[in-house]
Structure formats: C-alpha cells, structure tokens
Amino acid sequence: MSTPTLDGLRREGEAFMESLSREYYRAQAGLQPDAHFQEIYARHAALSSEDALDLTRETFRGTTPGTEDRRSARLMLDWVAETRVSRALAESDEREIAWEGSAMAKLDDGTRIPYQRIAIDLANMSDRRDRQALERARARLVNAELAPLRRQRFERERDLVESLGIGPTYNATFAEVSGIDLAVLAAQCEGFLRDTQAMWDDIFREAVRDKLGLDPREATRADALALLRAREFDAAFPANALEQVVRRQMAEMGIDASANGRVIVDAAEREGKRARAFCSPVRVPAEVYLVLRPHGGQSDYRTFLHELGHALHFGYTRPDYPFEFRWLGDNSVTESYAMLCDHLLHDAAWLRRYTELGKADVAAFLRAAGFEELQFLRRYCAKLLYEVALYGGEVPWDALPDLYVETLGRGTTFKYDTADAFVDVDPRFYSARYLRAWQLQALITESLRERFDADWYRNPSAGPWITSELFAEGQRELADELAQRVASRALSFGPLVRATEALVSAS
Ligand SMILES: [Zn+2]
Image 1 (tube, rainbow, N blue to C red):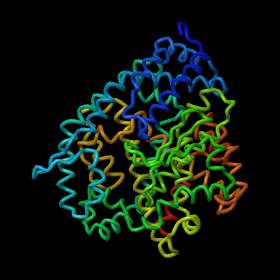
Image 2: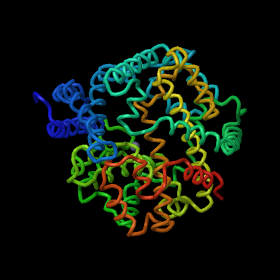
Image 3: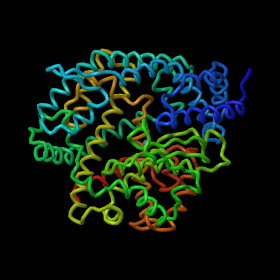
Image 4: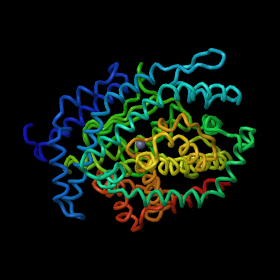
C-alpha cells in the first residue's frame, strides 16, 4: 500500500483486526501456546504509518461536525492513532506480561508466592494477619519491579499521543478522537461521590464491622478483596446449569443466543484455557467466539452474562455497515450491553426464576450485590478523577502516588497503597467507557421496563427490539447519542443512584 486511501485502510484494517482477534482467541482458549501480536502489527505496518495518520487526521479536519462523514472520520482517526501508539508500546506491554508470568512475592518468613496468585489468595484468606503479610510482600515487589515499568510506559504513552498532531495535550487529544468530554464526566463523578456518601458510609461501616470484625478506619484494599469474595451464595449458581439457563432466558425474550450460529460457544475443557469467560469477535458479525470454562458460583454467572452481552452485540451487528461502524467506536456502548446482561443478577424476579436462590436468600443476595456495586462505582469514579490527573500532565510524576492514595481512599474508604499508582490504571481512559456504560445500562434498563414491563427479560417482544434497535447499530453512535435516541434523556448517574438505593435496601 504506497499512498493509502480510506477504502484501502478499511480493507486492510478488517484483515488486521481479524488476525489480532483470532490470535487472541486461540492463545487464550488454549489452542496455541502463545500469542504473536508483534508479527501481526509488522505484517500490517501501513496501518500505523505516518501516511495513514496524516490521511485520517486531515480527513477528520476536512469534515463538518455533526455529519455522518465526521462520525466515520473520527472513528478512523481514533483507530489509526491508537494502533500507532499500541504498536510503539507493544514491546513494553509484552515485557510486562512476561514479568507477571514469572514474578514471585517473598513473605517475611521466606515463603515465595507467584504474583498472579496473590489477588485470589488475598480474597480467600480469612485471617487478617495472613492477609496483611501477603499484602506487604506484594506491595514490596510491585514497588521495586512493576511500578517503574508501568510509570515508564505511561510517560512514553503520553509523549507518543502528544506527538500525533491532533490536540495539544493527551487529554485534549482523547476528547477530540473519542467525542467524550472528560470535564463533564469528572464533574458527574464528583457529584456521584457526594450524592452517595451517606449511603456508602452506612453500608461500609456495617459490612466491615460485621463481616470482617474490623475497625472501619483500619480496612485496606486487601480487606476489600476478602469482603467482596462473598461465597455464601455460590451453591445457588451451579456450573452445569449455567449455559442452559441463560439460553432458555434469552429464548423466552425472543433472542437466539447463538445468533443463527454466528456466536460460537467454546465450553470444552482444555489445558491452557483461561479460567474466566471472554468474548472474541473474529469476524463481525459472522464469527464470534464466547469462551468459557464453567466452574459455578455467582461471579461465573456474572462473567458469562457479561461476555454473552458482548457476543450478541457483535453477532447481531448489521453486516452491511462499513468497517468502522462494525469494529470501532465508543466501547461504552458494547460495555453497556454486556452490563445490561450481567445486571440481570440484580433483579429479584430473575434470580427467583433462573437460579436456585430461595426467597429469603434473594434479599440478602441483593443487599450484598448493592454493596459491591456501590463499591465498584465509587472506585471507578475515583479512578477516573485520578487518571485525568495522571494523563493531564499538571501533577508531577513523583507526586502521583500520594494523589492516588488520597483519591482512591476518598472514593472507597479503603486504604490504598502508593505502590499501585501506576499499576491500578486503565490505559486510554477505559474507566470512562465503563462509567458511561454503567450510566447507559441503567437508562436502557429503565427504558426496557417502561416498554416491555418489569419482566422484560422474558417478554418475547423485547429481544427483537433489542437486537434491531440496539445491537444492529454496532458502535456507530456515541453512548450519549444512543441514550437520547432510545430514552430521550442525557447520560447521568441518576438512574444508577436509584437502582443502587433499591438494592441496598432490598427486603
Ligand atoms: Zn466487557
């Protein structure tokens, strides 16, 4: 490809995305021992070339805001810019993955624990002293080895993005190519933290005192992991029923969970296969893999429903849409469809119909889910506020760890560690996508209840509406445009505050 054209980029882009996605699927499903992403980038080097960047940047500048051409040009520019930055960071990302696979934390007594097992061990430890000892070892290791790697990675990423010639700063560039106003979202996050503070203080004190027997002022992030592990309901979510129950529910709502064979479920037991379910759209919409290894329990159900939401979205996307509307766009949209499915676990009648929870258990389950939901929402609000500062460039790199501990502590009340200031970061503001997905999901749920009643998930008219009005559009629209189209309302935290209040007071 000598002088790139937009259609050339679309054609090659589709081949590139298919190769990347297939490589990811095969490696994570245990079908091949490792992934070779660098080779794929090298094979499609034209996509990350200076010429491709110039073409998409100038095309974007030549379009009029508010037009369909502008929409398409923004998606192409966002994607070429991201591909270019990702390629430059691929080596350091691979180094990081290799580190994670081999690093060992060393306890005070000399015991060595693989880094990758620490989060699971922390969640399963009932003795607080054991938890603290392991957490100390983890923080030491991260501080000495992973944190410097990650800090370098973010410094590099900020420089690369600022040299793209799109906006003067990282944050201005992000706003330009994503169409997301970070200042508006950050103000909403501050508002959410304020509006839910009293509710959070109440349930936090109760949970930490009753379930962990701790002084609420002492609780750390490691204690949070143990608290959120909540195993008492797992028996009501049996592994062998998972796929069948969810297929039945989708059928009752009028959705074929296999999308006429385009969504392929890979549930086979295989060595090297990832434990958590994931979705790989290899060709959109024709070939979408939903990979799982059912082991039961509520988190297994939640992950499966979440990934199914992604899979159905890709599997029902209009095949006649151009590359950018099928493959690219605002990931807040696909995350909101994933959350629309996983939030079915917050519906009392759904739980009674499709799980083995008894009537009395349902209320207790919902209250626990409300605690978890509010914890995660407040954590993500705090993360977004911190990440705006991290990428913003006005706070010196050396001052970020203290800001991280202060901001995450303010949001969650749990004590965080400075060691994680560059580790606990979602690159490229993915936290903004999640927050907007949460907002959109709550709005769509309210809208589905109005249109198809409280039990919309088993109303045979709901599924066809969801596939044709939502999934078929791919990610052509921004999450806020979609909110206006289907609910005639702006994105906000309002519906989420209402839903969370209902959960924590379930009886
Ligand atoms: Zn997701």
